[in-house]
View 1 (cartoon, one colour):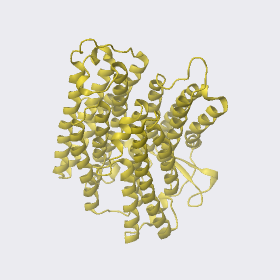
View 2 (cartoon, rainbow, N blue to C red):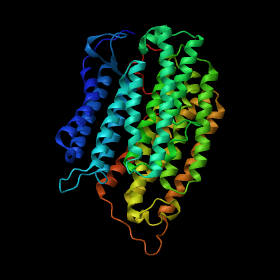
View 3 (cartoon, helix red, strand yellow):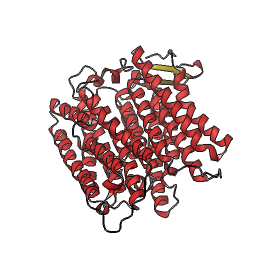
View 4 (cartoon, rainbow, N blue to C red):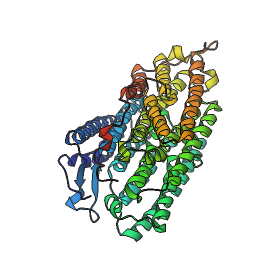
Length: 498
């Protein structure tokens, strides 16, 4: 599929460079201005993401930009198709909401003194955003590797911002898993380049062969990405890392960062690997996804701390994404992205991102109000921070897969695809996962609705921070009103793929 710069392609470069410009602005203007510069950058980035999404929908084709005017494989191409545009808007909206929330935790002192903690948080947040946009837009395997490394080195420090021994240990474990995943990914990339002399995805799509070298290379890359995505049994780093990070960081890590390696697996699977792929390979990924759903949902039920419960829930919900592979492979649709399984998987990713961001931010506010996040002692939270508890409950609807939340329609689509393709074990897993999710969500809500213990004094929480959480939860619910059918927008720009 030949590349050519399209109208509006310059906006892709702007999407990558805006966060970098914001970071440079923070360094140039001083630490005390970090918060204001970051907020202005986030709003500008949201406008750019929306403009790209509108251009993709208006033109009905992918928006492309050739850096320096050079065509791949000599040059580097950026491309936003329907899926990329959705991911960019999702990322910008979540980061804007997290930015509003984080003002209560990472604001510069009113006396104008320069403090390192807010400076580090806001610069890392912008760096992480640029890395995510690169993952969504890059069109060659090495650029994606660079983006993954930038993402890792922006995300890991967010885990240990408080500098405690436990968070430093969790961050180090995260780093080791991420670097191991990078080594596997890079080894696979080297094999691909040695076999085909190119790392451009569109070129590989045309020439990739079903031989042992390609199979080994893709296997190494997918295993490395599984470690970064925390798919069972490579999930051990995620619960302590996400539970120990500040609430704003946890929301970003859980909602966005773990989605990037999954998107890369999706691209390797459908855009690089020679088609058709063995059914056993898709079943293996779905089996690991099912194990994540069941095992980590049970682990979530066993947790005493709210943030640790939500962290295990993240691993469980990521498992749903890996159910997509056999459902799409076995679909009767002419193209994979025309199937209900493809749309269901993407909606599961998006709805989970909004719901999980809302849940982590809600957990942070509850901990601030009560002084702890012990699930058994959450009594009184519904009176002290009612908007926050309501937002947590609404986000929980999406995890459970109950109407009218986005998780309902996404899981219903996956369930429909499982029935259509006779993958009954996947259908049973989806139902069982919904029951387990309902159990741990109702456990938290029930505890929050209980009477407070005698003498409990709750700290006041600013309303704007509660509204930021509620906004994310309401978006997760609003996604449930999409039509129960494949969305044509998600197939834009993929017409040349098999």
